[in-house]
Length: 236
Length: 236
DNA sequence: CGGTTTATAATAGTGATACTATCATAACTT
DNA sequence: AAGTTATGATAGTATCACTATTATAAACCG
Image (cartoon, rainbow over all chains, first blue to last red; front, side, top):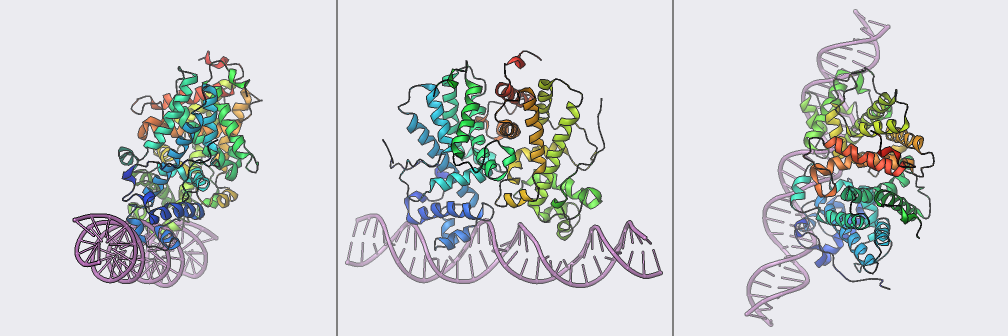
């Protein structure tokens, strides 16, 4: 069994002025920006606070990232690439399309399975900030421009992987991409709602199996929608 | 046929320091905050710009709303109440549960049907800012506190209305609230994605029938998931 | 090894933002 | 007519988002 693989995720180089994965300061920026965004929320998180936390200066951080919005999109890309990597890793030896899709859906809600060797990224906390604030990355007045620069390629690639898994079990499914993005967003929303706005979901926030329950929900959705004849329900 | 009804929507009074619907300045704040958020985006929108636009002062606006985040939540509440009002109005004389749910789902994507007499609210633009930035209202570090103050009651009420319509066609459906919130979010996301991140949806952004197409998607989702025997597909 | 890029730190500064406070005046109330 | 309340005018503060400059330390190169 593979526990951990040392692979650096490729992030769109336009997202940073200098590659943060390659230097000590850069890694500290990534590591502590995740922790501080989790701690303060994206709005209250500032480069000044980050500089103070890592014993550096605002000016030094600005040499890596244009501003906090771009840094945040960088983190989102890291997350999307990481999810896609894990889906591909875990479906590698699975032949059965239904089982492949099930595996993918489980990866969407579970950030606990360590599969990478990046000591400076806490995937669990990163997952939490994606759940709580992820949508802010692509809901901005500058989406179109940022999209042109390829800032959301990783999201689209992840979406395509899931859409293709759906098409593998039902080539005639009319909405593969909408279903894929809906699964991703629904995973995050139900995790978030269960913790903060419980009347917007049927998942219980204090359930120790929270992630599994949201996974069950996603499985229910994807197979009820995409399955041609409903045989999936019977198999384990 | 009812074209327009004069009803003031009830918004949680904790959201404002002074009721903006009751005064001329308040109405101008509501009217032009919608236009300016649409124009600049929520991040770039400031009370200073708003004050300048309506020929008033920052201090005066602060007498109505604590800050722009609360003002934004006020607008979201207005939107949610307005959608719920329209669902209830339009399903009033519809008996058939399947038809009732279809009607509700159509309301979620269509802001063009004028049904209220509030000259100072441009529902169409309000709908656009909800689609582009709505999630920011409830994704913040202070959700829990704001939730305790009832800032999201209107969203929950809307969610309940839809969940109940789902239960009316299938009392055994296991995820009524998750489905309801998913429909609302999926409506907004697919409208947004089709315009800005087209690879995340199957809906074409330049389609003149964009809203109808997203409505079709929602109908497909809700009936495939909730319907017990699949009879819905045959009827018009 | 010495010299030269290159990265970081230290510091300062600018304009905008998000407020808060005070006072004057206009408008509505009784 | 007097008193209450809403608004306008103005000023001020702390923080934010960024830019610029110079000094120093580290890495890299012939």
